[in-house]
Length: 527
Image (cartoon, rainbow, N blue to C red; front, top):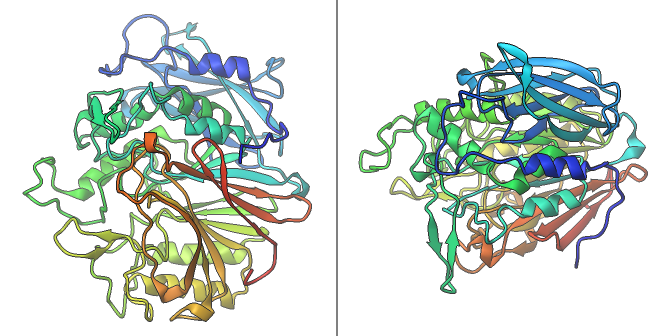
């Protein structure tokens, strides 16, 4: 099934965005701290994030110290633009910066351009880089459409120009989404990118390479370089300029299967820094510098990843952080586990926000799945990496916390919850039903899985029967670590109709082909 042609709700800046995306980037093999002559340039493009009905964050990176200046307009011609002076960009944030735009009209297309000015001579400025985004509608009838996926540049599969780079972003852009939910593993800081990789058919995958991606990330500079790497791709930059993002993190922004307090084994010679907490702090800083996030901005004392983004009367998005507050990976057979995968404080926050939500649909953006078994064998034992621990009986370990949440949703009569996730490098749809479950004190719900974007694909994970999941659709390879050239790259689309309130999920392949469709009606339980 080919990708349908959607009506143009978003006035794409085809000419100017293409020109922005085509700006010459630094040589891939080198990343100088900053340039020392000429005019400031925004060679890494622009992006927006955490857009609301009247605000949004605009991001840029300069190639040298500069003042960020943002102009907005209701039209692409930029007649009578409004100007906002942003921060000074310098080495303290790796020359990145965000500017919050306030007082925007709801449900409107916003055109913006970012200009970088010499801080000592404002008359010396670089060419503007343009972008566009749509603010959240205030009225229900306008509807909401978004895409989600995760897992970018994993398992050594980086940017191969011969393959077309991260071309999946072009297919996502064609769905004309209001935003992109980036569901974690936004970089693979623990996954070096080599110049070539062998393909099963005898061909060769040829990566663009950089110094920072030649080894596992340990220093702040190396973590920053991981985020810069993805911005070398023209499809990703062009997508960023057209579609705002809601971003969360998972493990590979730091290290595979990490948890707080973990120590890296002395036998792992890739790392000289053995404290995962030290690595996580550096990764978190770089993550906040390279994505425009309302709750994790450079200079914030107590930033956080978990947050709720209200997308009008039809939708609230609850972004979870299943890394920062989790307990240590273990066999997962504890009969008491108050910390779980979310931590007590985040769990109570989620309960409060779900209870106060008046949106028709409440999307819970989880960076790890609930009922799919994800194991951690990195420490020599079969430990639980996600929630499900393989025993189909009563909840144990981290399942106890999820059972508490599901019970709360039922007893507070919270309707319209849908779980979206990535992480497992295949796509699937699971329906959770108490009649099939060992734990039955919850209302039925759906969980949809997508990804990877440009990473190795893996066979389908086994299911754990504790919460009664039934897998109604799955597409996954039979072999492990299938390259993007072998297919099995996925993204999901959610389309909420403004008239009926129906929510339609489409699981799509790399080229946009629809693999599976599920339509959910508002206010119904057990559908």
